Image 1 (tube, rainbow, N blue to C red):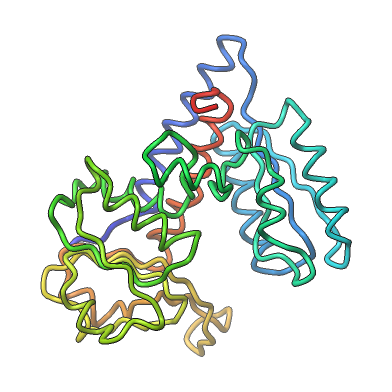
Image 2 (image 1 turned 180 degrees about the vertical axis):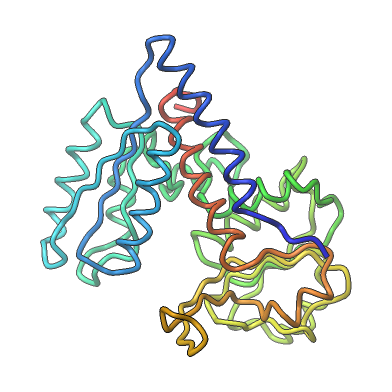
Amino acid sequence: MIILDGKKISSQIKEEIYSSVEKIKISGGKQPHLAAVIVGSDGASETYVAHKVKACEQVGFKSTVVRVNENADQKVLLEKIDEINDNNDIDGLIVQLPLPGHISEDTVIERIKVEKDVDGFHPINVGRLLIGQPGYVSATPYGIIELIKHYEIETSGKHCVILGRSNIVGKPMAVLMSRKGYPGDSTVTLCHSRTKNLEDWCRQADILIVAMGKAEFVTAGMVKEGAVVIDVGITRAPSEKTRSGWKLLGDVKYDEVAPKTSYITPVPGGVGPMTIVSLLNNTLKAAKKEIY
């Protein structure tokens, strides 16, 4: 069993991005700039944005955080997005999700200029992914693909079962794993909460990607010997064994599943760091005008 060390691989990729930024600066180019918009003061969202700001500093990017009151009208948020869209110094724009219930996530995502949509959520970027054209790929699936590449995991002809059909992870992951080339050429089954005989599907998986949002949902009996297991989930659970009073759990019951696998991601330290570094990669592409 080999642990897919996202923390280690992301550090290597950050070094590569930093070197690229240094070359841009030496040649007189513009420093890449990422803007993050956060609505309200949700603790988890604040933490995620702080991680992204720190990552920008590590690779030599500029970063800007724009805060909007959680009770603000949707129009106020859209005006902020318009300002960032029109700011030529800013290359990438993300709006931290989820948003308050009175604001339409679809409307907000579609308002972001497609060439600044480094989260890869805009319908044009999603459509380009679907038909195989260049575009920004959603950061978590992008990170998983990079992890597979770095560990040279075979995907051609493999049965990849994905648990979860979200627009952010499950659906784009299914497209990426079934596309021609490497990583890809897998036969993909996309499962969800309404799938019948879910455990049977899981046991057929050569590669099992779990993004259900249910702590320790996948147990040893759901995984075949030698499977590759990639855990996207992260849940904060109370714990009397830690100083903080809580611990992070994935969607996979790691201790009992890991011995059966050929490769597995830990939580934390697996997919999470790869997600952030993929956002940085998309921002670098935006700064270099590689796609649009």
